[in-house]
Length: 310
Image (cartoon, rainbow, N blue to C red; front, side, top):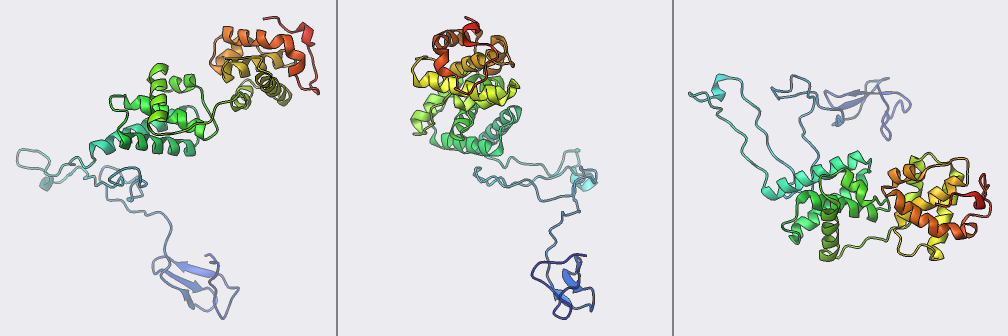
């Protein structure tokens, strides 16, 4: 029994309505008046016509339609026959599945699967997967990257999608979940930007700070200090030519060393995907002006003069 918004018995407005799914009627429980008919059953369909599902598959509607595919992702699969009429005299199946997917659609489906698998491994949301899929479709239709491996193009599309959605990942993070080298992904990245007039925002130290600090289990105070250190270091041009990732890593190292939550360069390097020496070089550039970089309300456990010199 259930009541339906907007539908009520005119004689008993407060009565509960009984839904008869077989007849498609809504009936007043007090007087039996049919107050609604042709009700659509929105429940799952419990019939199956597949002989290979073992009675477990309760749906026969197929997967969701993919508008990026030329065939709209609609196809018919013929299940294997079990009766004598399903086989010819020499024992061969009478009805076989013929290839109904074009080669271009097959390429897209494989690429979408690759993008989805990579995204799952680094916990990216559906919005980024959809943007990467659309970008790969655009590249595929443009035919400007012929000769490049589809897996490399897919990885580059995922990298671009992350940056466009404001949650950038480093090249090393993308390489770690793909089978393509960083050099090849970088080439495809540049070619896509050039051929399709696609723009990406410049990455900053703030794009990685919360994720790196969260992975390192650092406190909010340390994260706030590291964010301030990195931003001021860039604004004061203390670290010219250094990548935002290495500057962020050096800022986290400096802030953690001044607090109770100390982290080594090795620990930070493993999370940031940079070498120890890279963090050390940026840190050495920032250390002489550390007093200018820390926020004024930061509570030092280790004074600036006692911070590590390298």
